[in-house]
Length: 205
Image 1 (cartoon, rainbow, N blue to C red):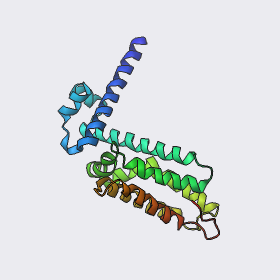
Image 2 (cartoon, rainbow, N blue to C red):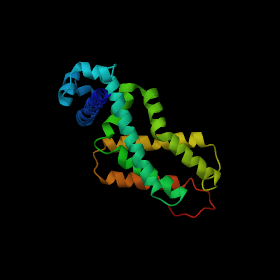
Image 3 (cartoon, rainbow, N blue to C red):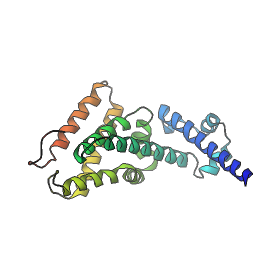
């Protein structure tokens, strides 16, 4: 039993090394520019070990790296929201944190550029929904039901808002205008969210 435990630990260490080094290389240079031989060399493993953990090779490995990045962004968004006291500020803080997290250097190329290109829009969108869009829809539903947001169907609102934030993050990831772009985009997002509030609600964010 002890030997089996050691082997399981070694397998997990191999998997984590592949994920860690792949994420570093993919974020620095992009999926297309990184070869399989380079990935296994950086991780200090064999190609056989890579295929053991990721039968689909480089694509499967990238999928796991993308999922890890999306989950990390989701955790940052949740933490930012949970630090607030009321549902409205939880929504606005979470949305603002998404912009910051999605455009971080270790995330933006993997999540916003290569993700849809490598896996296709449908799969990328499904992974995005599983990681964060579902939580956005839940937050919007709560705000609509409590009267903070003007009564309306939530699914189209959630998809429109998610799409706007993804597009803004993609623009920020490719922008060469400077760091002020994030602040300007965050301010625009704040104004857009404020327009959703029911007219009877206080105006502060």
